[in-house]
Image (cartoon, rainbow, N blue to C red; front, side):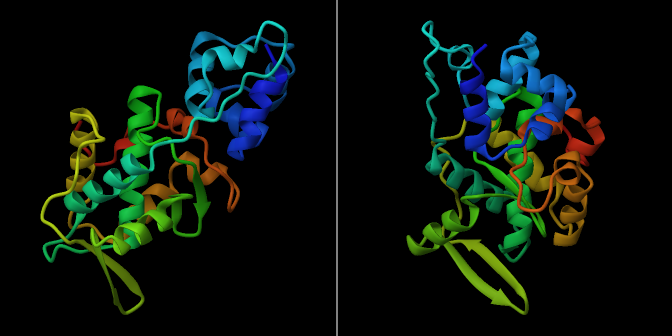
Length: 236
């Protein structure tokens, strides 16, 4: 096991050893042994690490001569924007609007519930612990770009920032039928509920609780939760 590859992948994603250890269900010293090559990964642990760190199985094992073969796979921004737009479509209120904070939480839930079900994220974007909940690094920039190209409309109402779709429908070309179905179920499950309701729900999840402010949140942490703390009122 090549220490440089796993360690480099972890550091590039902004995760601590403790976070990754919790995600694969081992102690930090045990995980440190995995990074150093002193301990072996189980197949399940390797699958979680591969998805969480976005590093291939071959990259984790290293090249035959010991050279690092780590390659950073950039997640699709266009797919992430479609997750945002469809979360807006299914989560908006009767007036067609949704708060920026609630929208961010719907997108987070789509990514992390998908990971819970399939051991891989829907978008692969890096999420961090921010004051109002887990938010992907690119969320705010993606919204700015969607506003600039006329896809969404932004407005202020008191202290809240609201978004609505310019068109009735949202693009879906980058999403599978199953991904779109999950986004719809999550949006409908939280329809009519307040921003505070969904913020409080995500704050009770392990990914929020275990991380420090500003830290990257490992997707794998969600697999340590009980189903009711993952799905909430979502009927899968």
